[in-house]
Image 1 (cartoon, rainbow, N blue to C red):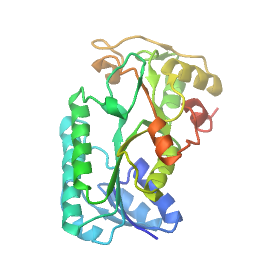
Image 2 (cartoon, rainbow, N blue to C red):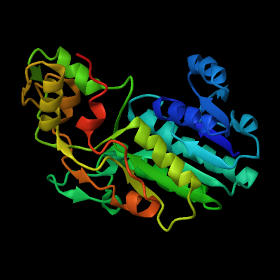
Image 3 (cartoon, one colour):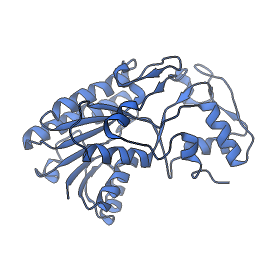
Length: 294
């Protein structure tokens, strides 16, 4: 049995907490969400309400932790929220590791948003550029984490777009679209289902020391957004929506006011080679089939 500390118990952290508890591990979880405390404790997880970007959780965490999972989300959507939760949060985690002499395994769930547009070409872990302010902050947070956990075995998992039970936004948008979706559909999606994220975390924690420290966690087959939308519409039994093509000024969705999304296919080859990881859902359509309802 391992003593596991989880910082951030949102969609991913909660799922891993339950999986780890079901495997017989002891879990301590830190979350900002007061409503989550009761749910976690009712599921056998010791929980503490607090911010990761502070030292208020140090006493709760203790000094006997074997594994650490930092999967905190931004405290607010703007740049300030990114810096507080990701950069400052990892600094406080690094300080806790130094104070306690932590030499165990640590995982930080980062994001594939660090990769720039590549015109639909493939990119690997070495292609991160931090083109936007948010991307630069995420890369900075990765560096802070890796340096802070240097006495142990530290791994960064860059997650693709997350979906899964209770989180199938695209299908809901299609059902509500009235035949039209905002933006464009001619770019690749790099997605991953929740259960496959949990399996990747489990593999990394239980494996021997590896030669790399940063890995992409995405499924096996990239789909253009238009392809996935068409397939989901057919499954839902509704007409295939068209895209309004509006980006930038005049866009019909706030998401598209910032312009075109990055078009790149992100490789999961390194994760599969290092850990023999095989996603249960090889592509997003396969992964969303049981999530859509008639």
